[in-house]
Length: 229
Image (cartoon, rainbow, N blue to C red; front, top):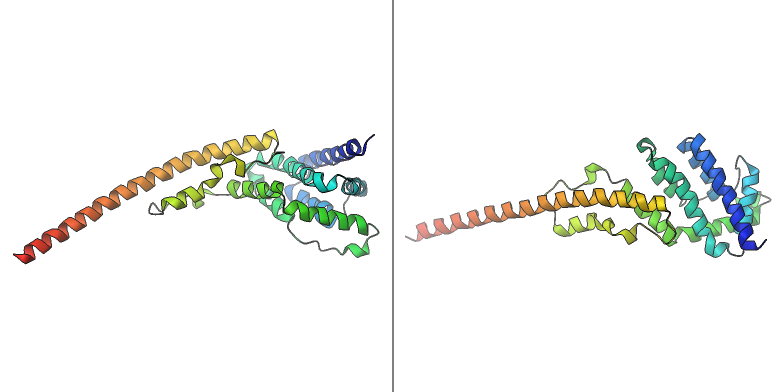
């Protein structure tokens, strides 16, 4: 078996592990597990899973492939949580989790080198297109109705900036799953409807504003003409 196929087999073991857990564990429990497994690299309830992760990070292809592996792990959880609105809160928490600093000193573990390699790879993931895409997706997903534009006087440029994520390439990376692409399509459709509503409000506001301005100027002109008589 080649190293690539061996690494793929180990990745699948992690995927299957997460697929099972996300169905039986609460989001908070899953967040704690993800922190132990991917951030700390220690104190995981199933030690054999840590050993499998060690093999993945030790692979010669890890520098190039690890970001895709972590991205798929994220989407396994996101896919499950996104189906239930009451669990949506866990998705941004998961993405923020990866950017938190480890609390455990790696020097106290016999797996010192494995933990160091994991943390190096996680730092690379944090600057990858995959993580950036996840962050953008979370920003769009967590936008509440209160954040939509209510002040009709806001500049058109603000409208455009608010709905910049209608552009698909901002939310999808090369390795995005079908499920993630479907979720993005849903969000785009909702955002498009809201954009049209807000744009209509903006245009209506501008028309009314111009009418009021014209009436005001007309009155001033009449007053000036009367005073000159």
